[in-house]
Image 1 (tube, rainbow, N blue to C red):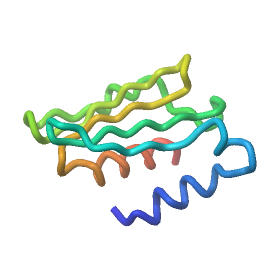
Image 2 (image 1 turned 90 degrees about the horizontal axis):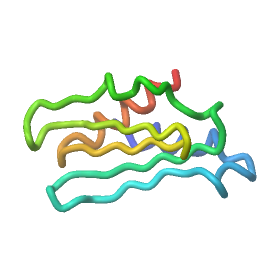
Image 3 (image 1 turned 30 degrees about the vertical axis):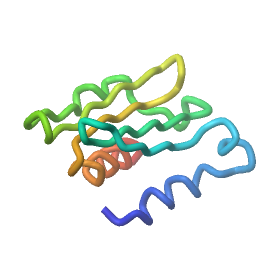
Length: 96
């Protein structure tokens, strides 16, 4: 994945308001892996609540887990150390 895709996703939502209430956070974890938090400001930018159907568990180190919080209008993604690009590609495909 080219980082420009997530840059474009972010830029498309920056409207003077969204970026103050929504956003994206990417952190490392100690398992090792990645944690991604995507916060939406309204359901227009939300994702389908069936997101858990897209969970991938190949092994203890090769996985992508999605947790959509409808009330918080946020999506949490946990993934293995080599799955960041794949996880972001899946996320970006949700809104197509």
